[in-house]
Image (cartoon, rainbow over all chains, first blue to last red; front, side, top):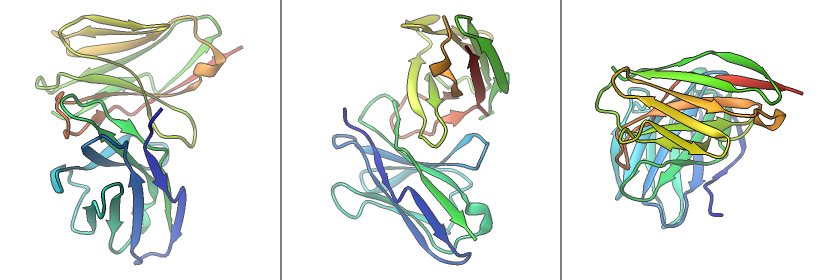
Length: 113
Length: 113
């Protein structure tokens, strides 16, 4: 069964450093998303991406964040200058077309020290 | 208007019992209501979803009940099993690919054997 994959599974970084989280969406999907989940809290939407453009973004997704589809398979989330409060699980998700059935990856745990 | 309220926060059920988790939404434009199951350290997995053209949807032991006028929906897990022990999130969105899923805060279900 096709699935969303994410790398790395755990990233540890120092405050102020840049990090790039990587995702490989399901191969025939066209819509891609990033969500985050702070430990013990709900899943929060960050951004959606379609046709090489951001479709929708939340208030959390400020200028420190950017997304990119650098090639035909990867989808990345970059955090330019990490803060302690960026520590969370980051989930990538993807959808084919039409309906909003989103399939999530296993997540990357980001720890900012 | 974007909130999804979920209750209870935690739930303990005996094996074989019925687990019931409730959610309420505010935005009347929402027309897609999925439930996700999350095990520790894993990403949310789509469990079952409903759209407002029906009041109930059943898949195996899992049933969603939907009350459009009350803006409420609920997940029923029949014959609950220890393997169902997980965190369950309800979500809501406009049923169009690329739109944000708005999640509830989650319910931690423990099924005792």
